[in-house]
Image (cartoon, rainbow, N blue to C red):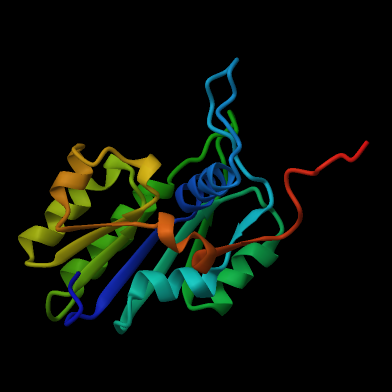
Length: 192
């Protein structure tokens, strides 16, 4: 980790949220669905944006922290919580097929702009395991930046292209209770 460098933080909200819910379910011992083969997701787990920014910064000064997400939720309290904890937030509408649109592109565009306008190299902390960020990593490396990928271990292949392109891989698994919390009991235990 580039502890001596200031950092820029880029967060793919959906990636952290969805993978965090899956990790929370695994920690509760909920098994993969035998019919669909899908990993379970703990609907009670929510991101603690203050804990997330602290974990990602790892004691470094932030220039800035950007979080990009998509609607839903239409409830602006989620995005306001991120703003109150130090994130600059951009939210995109979903496409006609209800799929997320423009989130990764927005992060790459904003990240590239920050890198090329910075007066000196810093650490780029990328909270996502998505290989769509490889072009951004290459821009950062051409400008002598250190790039850290922070993601839940199940969200990336350790020998995959993104993990082998960045300088540091920081799995978020051990920090799950620092970067999130359970807002209600799940699974609900039914007593006879």
